[in-house]
Image (cartoon, rainbow, N blue to C red; front, top):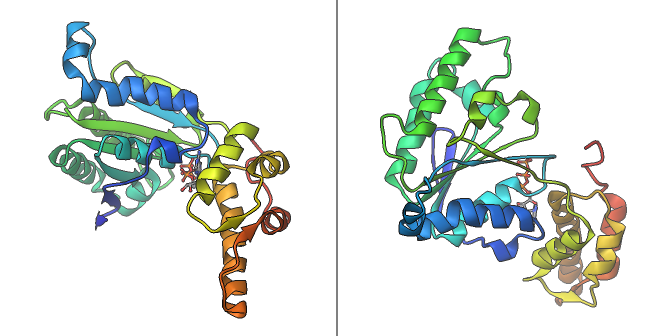
Length: 267
Ligand code: ATP
């Protein structure tokens, strides 16, 4: 993991198979991002322009960052993530230069999935920033995205927001974030898959993920992860106390459900 300024770069090993549910999004990413990278000639033969990104929106904790990371894992690419709210805070006055830096690093490290979180921060009115400065930053961002001066081949852009209504409409033009996809809280089948994925490498005993999926309506992927973390924690303690490994059981997770409630209900 490298950190420079306010972004992170890593080479993830997460794969689509680690991501529970989200089938529609997986298909869309395969078609728009993975296949063009693997078969550029085919796309050219059909006269189809490669490029453009996907904008994901929906409640927090439902896997937007996670699937972006898995996209990088699928194609053996680097993964850079930036949160625009933080960037604007930290880079006040210097945002344009720093945005350029991030894109420059991505272009140097292709193939690279550039994940831009909180893309609504660009355009939202801020008391601490003049409207004209914000417009300037948006224009700079669009120029980087369009690859006006530099070649963006191999830079794959995914963006996310919890507030799609605040995203500047210029971002959604063709060739930019021209696919907008709602990432919903996981349904029962997806919750079962997410639980299975989260428990895959843990010592477990007699767990029925389907039953827990039924008990966790409204739980996001992050909420489900919290349940497994709570159960893991208590089993670790118990294992220490007893001096032998105590696997996670159905009862532990049901107990965790009582402690950690769903966070997505307001959506
Ligand atoms: P935010 O809007 O807060 O950034 P997000 O939608 O990006 O939220 P993630 O950070 O991707 O949510 O999800 C949080 C964690 O929950 C992930 O690191 C992962 O462990 C787990 N998780 C979420 N969705 C899934 C999923 N579909 N399959 C497996 N794990 C998941």
